[in-house]
Length: 297
Ligand code: URA
Image (spheres, rainbow, N blue to C red):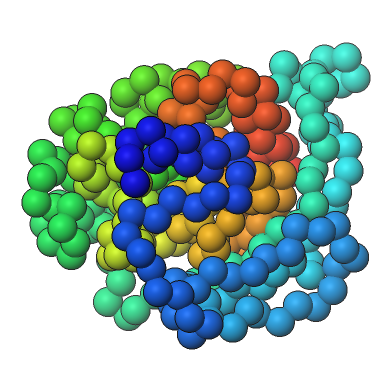
C-alpha cells in the first residue's frame, strides 16, 4: 500500500469509516483470537446478554450491550454542588449521557501479578516481549496519580515520549493537557498510560502481536489504579481495551464498561491536530467522561 493510500485510510479510520488498516494480511476465522467481535450499536432496551464467543486474546468476554447500564441515558448530569446558573464551563450545553455500550471482562490476574505500578514499570523497562524493544531509547510505562479517578489511555509513545520516557509530552500531549484542564481534571490528577510501552517505528500503529504482548501491563495498571472512569484516545486504544475491531465512530458516544469501570472513547489528540473539525465532538466526549466522574466520585 503506498503512503498516500495509507494516510487516506488513516483519516477514514479517525473519521469512523469502515475501512480498516492492515499492515500485513491477516487470516481471520471464527475461532481466531483476532476475529472481529460483532457489537451492536443500536439503542435497544437493556437485556441480559450472553458473552460473545471467541473473545480476543487477553480478554475473557465481551458482551454486546450492557444489561445493567452504569448511568441512565439522559440530559447532562449536574452535580448538586452547582447552584442553577453557576455551572462550570464544561457543563454549559453539555451533551447528555449516551447509551450503554460493550461490557468487557478481563481474566483474573495471575497470582504472581505485579503488586505495584512501580513493579509494572520495572518489568516494562527490561521487556523484550516484542520487536519494538529493539529501537527504543526509553520505555514509556505511564505516569500520574496512582489513585486517579480518571485514567487516560493512548496508543503508544512517539518521538518525544521515547526520548523522555514520559507519555504525551509532545504536541498531542499539549493538547491533551488542555482538554484535561477544560474538564477541570488537570494532568497531575489523572493517570496516563499507553497500549504499547515502546515507540513503534516511524510512529506507525502498533501491530496486533505488539499490542497483545504489551496488554498485560496496561490491564495490571488499570487494576492497580482502579479509576472511576477510563478515557480511550483513538481507535487503537479503544479496540485494544474493548477487544473489538470497530470504527471509532461506532465506539464513541457509548458508556462501555471494562471490568465494571465506565469507559468513554474519543479521538486521539494527534487526530485532532490533523483535523480541528473533530475538536468539537471530542469536547463532547470528554465532557461525558467528566459527567460520569461527577456522578460516580
Ligand atoms: N501518542 C500516544 O498515543 N501516546 C503518547 O504517549 C504520545 C502520543
